Image 1 (tube, one colour):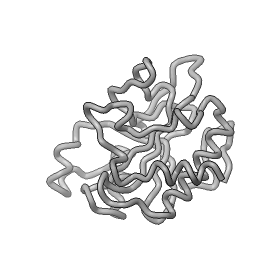
Image 2 (cartoon, rainbow, N blue to C red):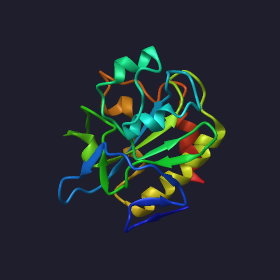
Image 3 (cartoon, rainbow, N blue to C red):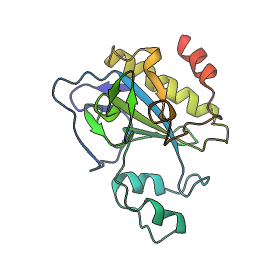
Length: 183
C-alpha cells in the first residue's frame, strides 16, 4: 500500500466518497490519529450499513436502532472491516467528521488536525488479528506521510471525548498495537 500525496488516497484501497467532510483550516498540520469502533446495527458485522451511513445513503427505516442516528452526518477517513478490508471515505488532506466535540492536549476540534480510523467492532468484543495487522500498516504509512503524528498522538476516541465516547473500548489491545508498531 501507499499514500498518493496528490489525491490523499490510500492505494490500492476501495474508495467510497463521502460528502460528510470539508476542507481543513488553512495551514493545518495533521498530527494525530484517532482510533474508533463502529458496527451497524451495534454488534452486527459485515452488514454494509457502516459504509452506507458514512456515505449518507443508509435507509434509516431498516432497523429500529437507525432512528437514533438518523440526524448524524459523520464519516471517517478509513474503515477496517473484521476481515481486514480497508475502505476509504475521505482523502487524508480533507477533514472527515469523525471526532465531534473533542479536545486533546489543549486543542479543541480534533477533526481539524486528525485522521479518523474506524475499526469494525464494539467496545467489548476482541478485535481480529487481521485488523491489528492492517491498522499497523496504515499507521506506519501515515506517520511517514505526516511526520508530526508521533506515537503519543495515536489515541482513542475516548481520549479526545471522554465524557461522550468509550471507543475503541476495553477490548482494544493498545499494548499489542504498540508492540506491532515497534517492529
